[in-house]
Length: 190
Picture 1 (cartoon, rainbow, N blue to C red):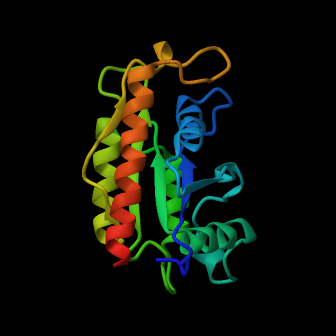
Picture 2: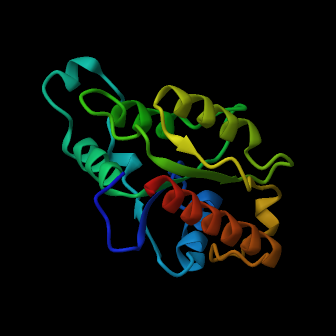
């Protein structure tokens, strides 16, 4: 947990997609808008800049973009991961970022509360990718919020051409997830 003791919760949001018109980046923007009072969501949008994980490169030190990601994860009170689903799993760019960020020393996910959501044009709304992320976070000893689950199916019908979330029910689901994440984070602080 970060050292934020001012009563507010700082969440680092990461969308696991590089696509300019990504539904997941749009869902993260919606989450920023829907954050409850007492919660601020910052975003990390530099997955594109993270090189493929290479232990030989790490021996020379973390690349600056990875060092920044690790520092921001450590400083945040909680995380919000918004993932697409590729081939029934987590996108390579997101997995790569998690692999880099989790390397010793002092991997920053340990004891960190987090919420997961995702959007897909498909019928399952990233369910498989979200469950794979949960498996990864077991090893990293992060503390994922179990419910509510937000799996935005039919995303191509829930966002407009400018990437704004227009579906009111989905907005309510995201808002409920953020309230639960705030409560979870405050509960773990005590």
